View 1 (spheres, rainbow, N blue to C red):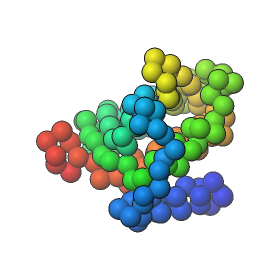
View 2: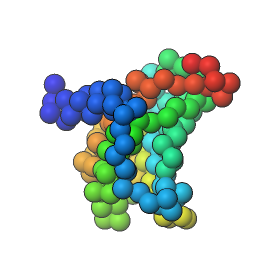
View 3: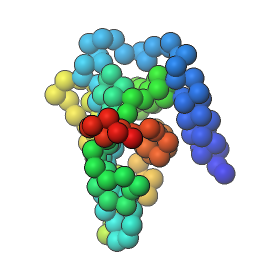
View 4: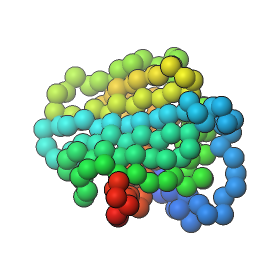
Length: 162
């Protein structure tokens, strides 16, 4: 297991066990929380790659639109634990979004793409598309944390059913 994977598992474990007792602030002001937004979309491949879009707002509300090849298909929501949200906010603040290219593609048509959309200012959305972990490391780390959250979260559909 790589160091990065161990870090992700440790962070997610801490997030789920400490979610209720965490009082650490995310570093976002109330105004920044209104415009903070992050989404990750996985596109189709020539196979059974999960196809979904997941978004998080500044109030830690996560929405999942599961389209194909996931245990549940449909629209779901979950609350993100404070510690995980704080880690993701920290990674988005460390990332130098304005220096990144908009696309990091391999050129192979059978790979799924990952589309990341991020905004921390109203009307200022950054979109970055990549394949095969070719994006800058902070972006790949954010996506890996969110993918782990997607598999471990207790999702509820719009009727409140798990």
